Image 1 (cartoon, one colour):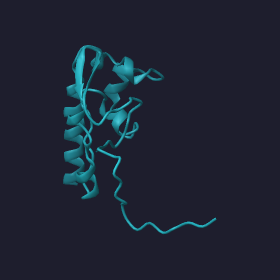
Image 2: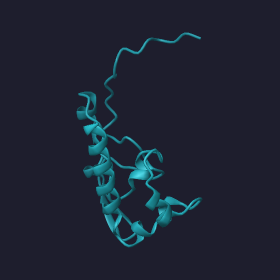
Image 3: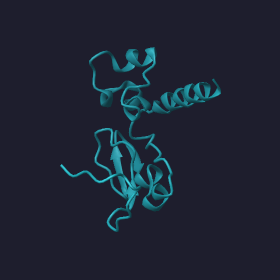
Image 4: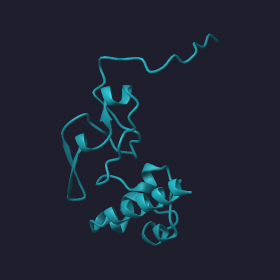
Length: 118
């Protein structure tokens, strides 16, 4: 097998927007989608292809998925089990249904800040 060494990101002409994680949703480079009564604007998440080429990290779509999904369950506080439950599907989380998922993001950001302070 002939494997070429990684030389860096290669520019392509067919990519407009980069997302860090799909969290099991189909993404678009533009436009909106209604999920659980909320409008998701894809331009609010990820980053442009040009930004990504310059080293930017794609931002999560906070009104589409939760930090547990975004981190592939690396961050899952104990209280999350009370809402999602062991073995439950994250998309049926009560916080998603009642519009309070922003609280999860607030807690995630606090935990991230505390980790960086260490």
